[in-house]
Length: 72
Image (tube, rainbow, N blue to C red; front, side, top):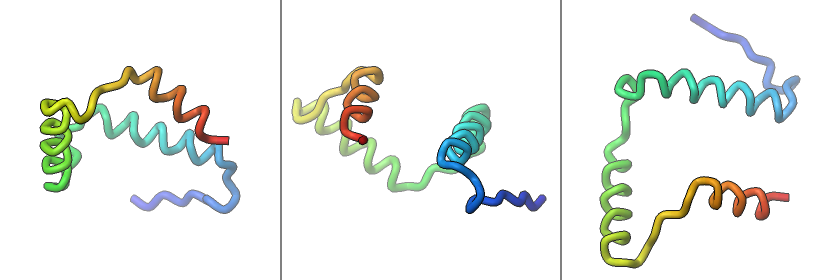
């Protein structure tokens, strides 16, 4: 199936809405989405940093707020 979207004619808001719908749809069956091998390597490295006290988790709301403040 070929889907034609005129990206040049879409607003940024429309493009983001399309991406959100795609992620939502893909999220319904995460087992069907292949994960590259480097994802496991990155997760392992992050887990090590956390266990060594070199990194920490932040609540999603806090992260979103930091991003909002950083993006003009």
